[in-house]
Amino acid sequence: MIRYDLVCADGHEFDGWFSDSAAFDKQARKGLVSCIHCGSTRIEKQLMAPGIPVKSNRKAAPAEPAKPMLAGAFDPRQQKLIQMMREVRKAVEENAEYVGNRFADEARKIHYEEAEKRGIYGETTSDDAKALIEEGIEIHPLPILPEESN
Ligand SMILES: [Zn+2]
Image (cartoon, rainbow, N blue to C red):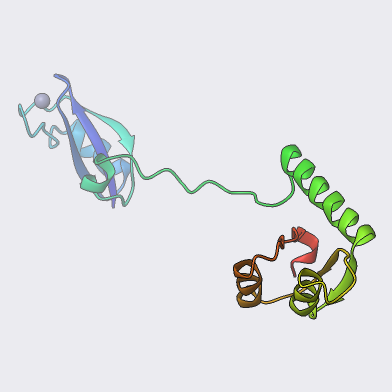
């Protein structure tokens, strides 16, 4: 079956189902297709929309398809930011001592002057980081670069 949007000589729009385009031509020629509004048999096809229900076809246009999104270090500004973070890390790595997971302990020792005053960096849990901050120990999160986050 093919659904045709039809229009009569007076411009009334309606639709009809036909087994094929030849069937429409035959019926229209014989005057068997008439306008549902005025009964005119001078009918023409508009657009062909096979298999699409009238209602959903007529209602609001289909939702705009989802746009492909791109994420990651493609934006030049983002590249600059990553470059900056890289430099921060580099500076930290050159000027601070890596203490690994002893970070919280070492930070505390330095703060309470139990250890040599120096810059350190390492890993700590967010609970420990919170505790350090609550103790008034100044710590800063290090930027995690995209290629290091996995
Ligand atoms: Zn009509």
